Image (cartoon, rainbow, N blue to C red; front, side, top):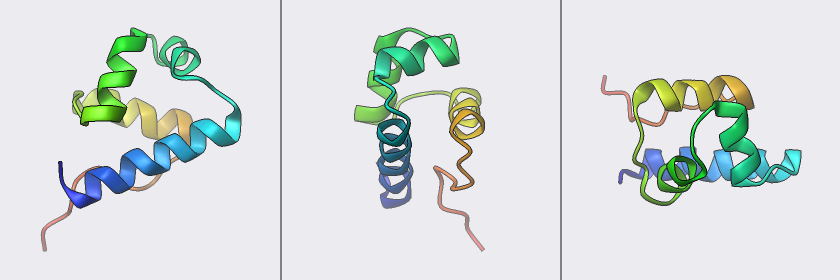
Length: 69
């Protein structure tokens, strides 16, 4: 997992904590299984569509990928 991806995951976890949401709560909001959220936040696995939904729900503008110049 890239350093940028880890930075994104840390930001997602921070936003979940700020809102008082568990991973199970967030899974319901996203319409996915709690296991999928756990896998996303522990291993970084998940589709770009799922990560985009995460960004929209948590109002995150940070990318999960490093942008090459």
